[in-house]
Length: 250
Image 1 (cartoon, rainbow, N blue to C red):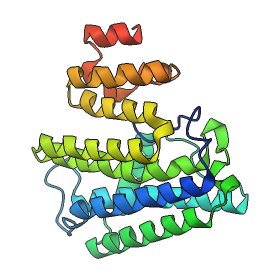
Image 2 (spheres, rainbow, N blue to C red; image 1 turned 135 degrees about the vertical axis):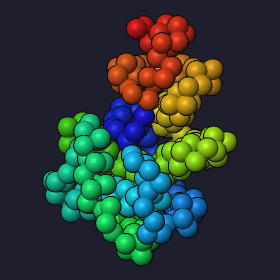
Image 3 (spheres, rainbow, N blue to C red; image 1 turned 90 degrees about the vertical axis):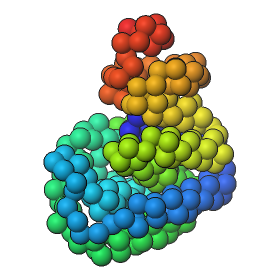
Image 4 (spheres, rainbow, N blue to C red; image 1 turned 60 degrees about the horizontal axis):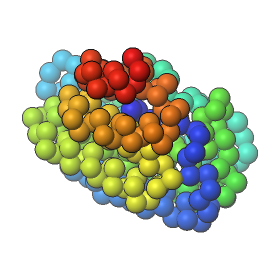
């Protein structure tokens, strides 16, 4: 699953102070983890057509963090956020981001990474309880959701992509497990979505045996996720498995 919104049942009952602290903790963890990929950023072109360099990946992560900053700033000011309420057109948006930043220098991308983390942490700290729980447009869920979605969860996703692309499935799984552990520890009210996302990691890599228990647990706790699962491209590699068909009622 990508960073789309699951508004219902998403930790709305957490205290604002606890939530703010947890959001900052997750961003500090994401920044430390992203350093592995950041260290590989240089001005070399991608290894082949359709592949991203480390610079492309970091520029992409930077841009989505900036998106989260704008969302939090708008909430803090009580203003309407001029940006996507969710990521329903994610492929087109990502293509635009790639084209906009592919010519950026490595030094610019590295500097922006540091700046974006600082600015996002500042934006979290500037928000009040009401700001963080403000609903985004079009049922996008509470605004605080943009932080983990564009923070540790997004970092783990791209670390996983990078590892798979470079022939290291063990590192890909380790990155997914790291993100899952953060979700479970810091955002326990969101456990069904964490289970779903972890299932999607295994599904993308064709491992139905590991994906199914997580997917089943997620759907039992959040039956509304089934509607999304029926069309989620992450599940395509295992969708023809009879067990998945039975679970989804497809």
